[in-house]
Amino acid sequence: MGIKFRSQHPIGSIVVDFYCAASRLVIEVDGISHDLGDSPDRDARRDSWLRSQGFKVVRVLAADVLKDPDSIAAGLVQMCAAMPPPSGLRPATSPRGGDSLGVAC
Image (cartoon, rainbow, N blue to C red; front, top):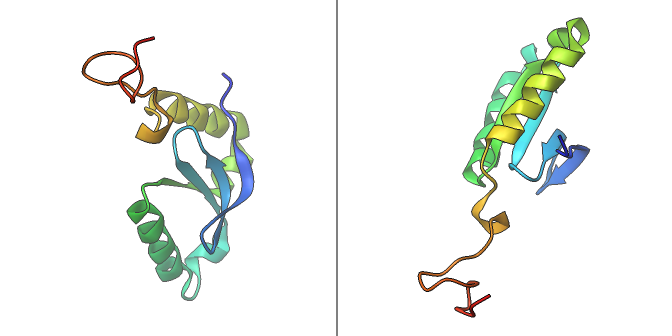
């Protein structure tokens, strides 16, 4: 479907598991370690910061990925395809037509 994902992508001081730039979607794959110690609080802080920066965050259980990777991948691709691109990636328009500088095309 032409949707590209980057793995281990840095965003600020955070490195996310996967990132789809076209839809500003962050995908985190959580193993059992995310349930232990201060990990749930740390994950919540990371998610909150990422959302405050305009990213959508999806967390997927590693067990689900291992059980049915094709279904998980298809669902994520479908999610990316359904999301409108961020405004900075949409074609610029003006009320008079043409590009954002008002130049007719």
